[in-house]
Length: 138
Image: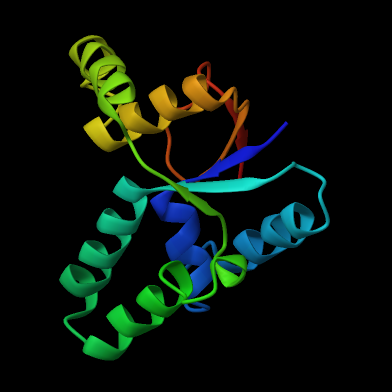
């Protein structure tokens, strides 16, 4: 039993002014105590979080804060173990996206594909659309 951390969750964890920050911190404390198993973050989440931090704020300090969280020199200090979307998961995500593009982004589909590969049952997210695909922690 482990959990994948979505971009919306990571950004809420990084920024106390996010509407979901309080809940993200509560859920992350549960994860840190082992209640939900190990935490994972995909390389797509790292990319998306850093991009959104810049697009939404246009402030280097904001991007640095997210970068310090996700790209910490000590992997044990990151919110989750970084896993990379490989060829298999990419192909699975493409198939999922063809069927569910109206409700899930391609990145969301990569989440589901990686979760399938790693046998992860839970996703920490504040986005809609994952219901029916995984147990949502929000």
